[in-house]
Amino acid sequence: MPFGLVIDSTGCIFVSDFLGDRVIEFGPSGNQLLEIDSILDAPSGLALSPDANILYVSDTKHKQILAFEVRSEPVAVHNHTVMSILID
Image 1 (cartoon, rainbow, N blue to C red):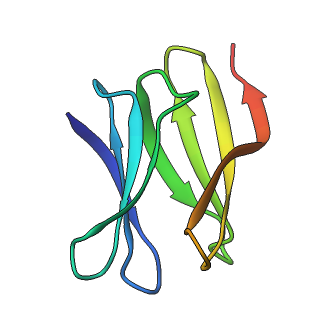
Image 2: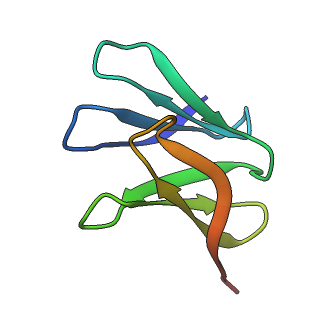
């Protein structure tokens, strides 16, 4: 179930799939580029940093905000957390 989305300056679209526990990145032509799913549980809101180098994902069930480094080559987002903020 798509929940949140954000579009970067190149036209790539990041979509959070709340029920699927994943974030999917689509290229400007609509092709799927990447899927982040190994550590997410009910992702909802998405945001990009002002320089578009960090993708922020709110992980609803874990009550945290995860930050992923965005890269242009060879894949757009590395599937590792660069920051985690717990929310009470």
